[in-house]
Length: 117
Image: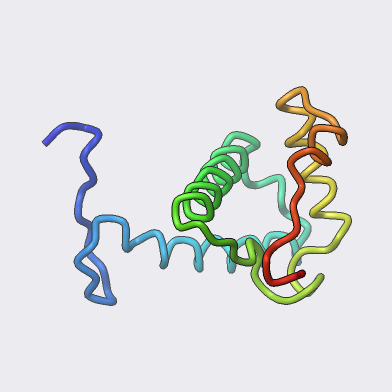
């Protein structure tokens, strides 16, 4: 098996999928993040770990939405239940800045979802 091939991991839900563990891991990450934020301890997670999670999430979201030709809500909860507008816009601003893009490029790519028409 090459290093690029997925390894099957023990899965308590009985999934026969080498990536099934991601479902459980994301639930644990969401729970741990809520605890860290509640306790004011976000600094316990490295910048690199946060960047890896954001990079993976963005790439997977785009691959699913483009590849499956559909969109889905990229955040849990409704409205600002789990992510505030300030948090979302801060993250988007930093992502744009990291890619040397600005609001104009965002405006060019922005599109209304089919279910919002």
